[in-house]
Structure formats: structure tokens, C-alpha cells
Image (tube, rainbow, N blue to C red):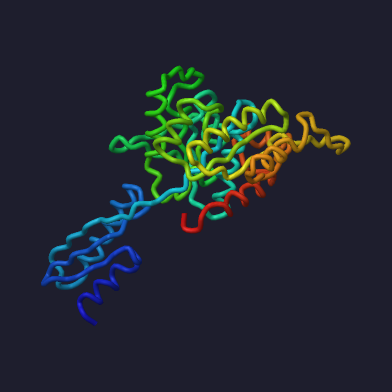
Length: 314
């Protein structure tokens, strides 16, 4: 066995396929692929690789160069034309659903009017840290790290920011240290204002999911949100009809307080996919209030359809 074979054998249990080494005299030069690792993990891997290399007989000097490939992320914007349609609950549940299907998902809560993701994801009161001026996403019990506008201000404080400040905060969150996350679900505020314009102009979502309730008033506003993304050239992944149907827990009778089928009909008229209906279900409300968004099965079909939309390798 050559000395390089001995070195490779020492590095493999520590770094797997991440380390490529060559030896020149008594000096080992190692290229270390740290793609997808955060800074503490990179430092620890380099330390372990150095210890392993220095243990090989005949090596006096170890030089290590870190390299990484740029991760191309799929950005999924979740939008609505108006507030009160359950967009944040859909965003949280979609992020968790995609994670369960095998995507490495991060959640960005850009809803300046009601940043509720910390509560929905069970990390209320959490604050992100910054390293080298880069925000570090907060881990959640659901395996989906997140950053939220609600984590950047004091609790119960109104976010009375002008457009440039909002755009700057959105940029800080999207440019956070998302490490190996290949998908970011972005909970946008309702409407078609500064945050949406910054999103489509600067960060270019891979696609948009539109949330509406079945009644005509909500659908009018949903069409405006769709129009914004279409004009910007952002693909519409599909339309979700939320709060669609209520099953009485006592008698089981189904009623439709907000109507039924309006979003599906609108999707057909506009020529965009219909992703499914989410019922008006107390189990969803209870789970969300307890920080367990995504713990019901109502979102599984929607998540699967969005998962199938994401280009393979994207």
C-alpha cells in the first residue's frame, strides 16, 4: 500500500468522499468539499481531517483547502390577494409536507402584517443569531429551519417600516445561512406591495402557490396576486382552496359557509393547476395554535402535488 493509499484510508472514515488528497514529499495537500455545511460543521470537519492526516507516518505538514459548490435553491412563494385566508398555515404545512417527502426545506416568514410562523412552527420567542453579518436560521421541532419578520422585532411591536427597510429585511432572511436546504418556502404578506415586488424582481421565485377561500371576494383578490406573478414571468404552481367545507363534529353533516368550488372553477378558467381543498377543520386550528402546523393529513395531497411540480434536480 502506498503512502497516498494509507492517507486515503485514514481520511475516508472521517470525510467520506469529501476529501481529495495528494502527497508531495512529507507534505499532504487536501481539498475538502464543504458544500451544504454551516461554518461550525466545516471547522469541525477540517479539524478531524487534519488529525487523521497527521496520524499517517511520514507526513510532517498538512495543508487543507476548503471548496464548495453553489446550491441552486427552489424558491416557492406562497401568496394571497387578501388577508384572512389561512395563507400562513398553508405555508407552514407545505414546508413541513415537502420536508417529509424528502426535500431539505427552509421557511421564510416575510409577512410583515402578521408574522405568525414562530407560533405555528413551535418556536415562539426564538431569535436568530448572526455570524459574519449572516443570519443563522432557527431550528424547529419539525426539521424545517426558519427565519421570520417576527423574530426581528420585539413581541407585539408593530412593524411600521418603509419599503427599503422591508426589502432589506427580506434580503437578510433569503440570504441567511441556509446551508444544505434545497427549497425555501416563502410566506408573503397579502396583496401586491413592496415585498412581492422585491421578491419577483430581485430573488425570482421558482414558482408561486396562491391561496384563496371559495367566496367571490377572495377570488377577485387572488386573481390580482396571480396577475402580478404572471406579468413578472413567475410560474404559477397552482391555486389552493382553503377553508373549503365544514364537517359538524356532532352530526357529521357537511356545510360550506364560504361556498364551494370557486377556486377550482377560477383555476380552470385561468388555465392554472388546482392543488386541492383544505377543509375548515378544528383539528387544523388546534394543531396550529399548539405549534404543530402540518400535523394533520389535510395538506398531504397538496404537498405531494407541489413536490411533483419541483423539477428533478432542482
